[in-house]
Image (cartoon, rainbow, N blue to C red; front, side, top):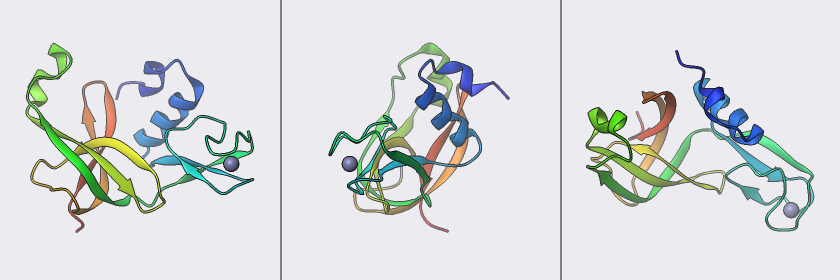
Length: 129
Ligand SMILES: [Zn+2]
């Protein structure tokens, strides 16, 4: 497997992608105001506190938006097209962009799986089992 950590220069992003490669979706919660946020920033966007901790999402959520990509951003990803990209509202209160089953719809309940995509392992949301 490719060393996905080497693909990110930002240490917070590198840690996040390392977690994804291990089947985890991390998000941050502020220890001062309890706000949840994604993506990891190391600082609370609600109150400015640097006392944020990383937690692991259970991987369950709801599709907020979904689209199908027919023209990927690089030739290396053309073999994957068409594929779906969704905005998913996780039950923990954060929204993230991720891959998804193209048969899903806005409002569908989903759970996270993890699949190879190009040089990374990425979250891919599917209907609950
Ligand atoms: Zn805060």
